[in-house]
Image 1 (cartoon, rainbow, N blue to C red):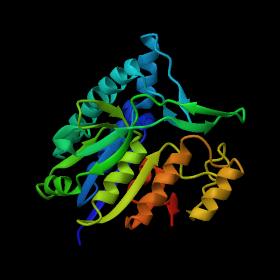
Image 2: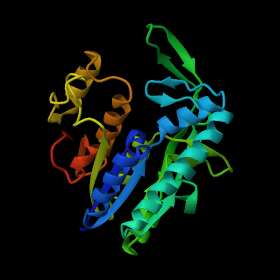
Image 3: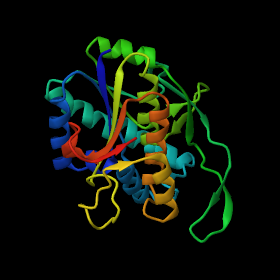
Amino acid sequence: MEKINVIKVGGGIVENPDSLSQLLTDFSQLSGHKILVHGGGRSATKIAASLGIKSQMVDGRRITDEQMLQVVTMVYGGLVNKNVVAGLQARGVNALGLTGADINIIRSHKRPLKCMTLDDGTNQMIDFGFVGDVEHVDGQMLSVLLQQGVVPVMAPLTHDGKGHLLNTNADTIASEVACALVPYFDVTLTFCFEKSGVLRNADDDSSVIPHITEDEFHQLTQSGIVVGGMIPKLENSFQAIHQGVRQVIITRTDHIDGQGGTIIE
């Protein structure tokens, strides 16, 4: 079975010209089939603030009202996505920018109200607004594109099939895409961000945890070592492993070739 790399990069990387340039060069040099999934949250937060729209995050997820949905659609599906696509084209990669709505690649439903434990220890019902939970990824259509030499570049937006776009966590999209490709490819999923991996000490980049099992993940969250956006990243990693993804790696962007980082088992 042919191999494929599904690479997810955070907004902090694609929003910085220098790190974006290095990422695109490294990604373009990866051999074989590949998909790039990107974030863009920092740009969305900055542009929203300039428009007087306050950003609110709960457990690493952005609450998305109607105004914020307009912002993330412009930023994720437009500014960030097309900059990445143009940069890859300049490097000889036949990239195609996609949201989940394009050719019906990713269908989601609007997240229901959810009871969350807040930082102050209280429980509260949270309305995430126009946030999507993935129902289906068309792995067959993606495989057709890939076999034609197309490299999908996927923005963190999906749709509900009823004309509504939904803001969807980029880590979740990467995980769900990787799982949908399991029948067609030998899949490696890599989450790239600014750190060298999952860190035991957030202030010490050399404190990488080289391997994490699911039991260890629960221990790390309970002890407060793994917090914030790393929680959904690891949740998505274990979901992917359970569904047949061969390997999940969390690492720095300059280790996009699989060297170093944290391996999820």
